[in-house]
Length: 274
Image 1: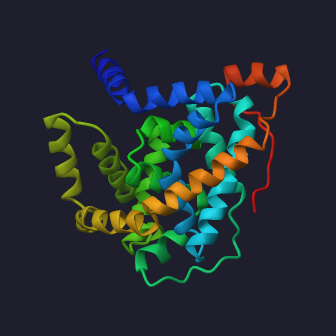
Image 2: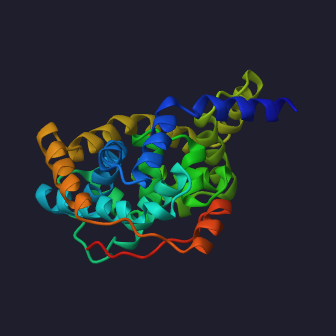
């Protein structure tokens, strides 16, 4: 009972004002309000730019054009969305569906190269959770994974970025790293912390990995800043997006699709953006 109460309080605390604003903007955008759509899109520009920047080796102008296409496609798909998480799911789907495997991974940053070697969905989860500070529940909804499975992915990704082969770890070591990952997402009790400390002490490599995870955080922030658009480019993207949305209609889905999405979001049209 106590654990359920803690879970409820955690979810309530993370149902932030920003998401409440996003829901209102989505509702207005679905009714054709392009300015509210721009406000909604602006909250996801950094995530999209960082995803493409850590995926492709390309000019900033090409990355901006790719980002614009994503949000024009999202505008067209708004009729399928019932919740903010639906909007985020379509965004993620567009990114996954339009990620080519035949891309250059070259970069003057070692961590960027490592990020480009990650699977697209793993890269997205890492960026959303680590760099954009999405609540774990929101990332879980997009990834269609339970929190435990998501933390397993995040733990593996962090290890790979630190140069630690996940495959080289024993099963108990992997479980210990997953437990550490989960502890970072919430405020565990003193007893839980003690148990985790005692458990970690048994595995020297895990203690080393945990320390490297903490040292890696500033590098990840640098990755975000590297691909974050400056004010001029940001305004240009939004200006071009406003012009495009004013010339593009929202797709009106069949009523059966809307009914299905009300219960469980699974239907939307496929649009190629690149």
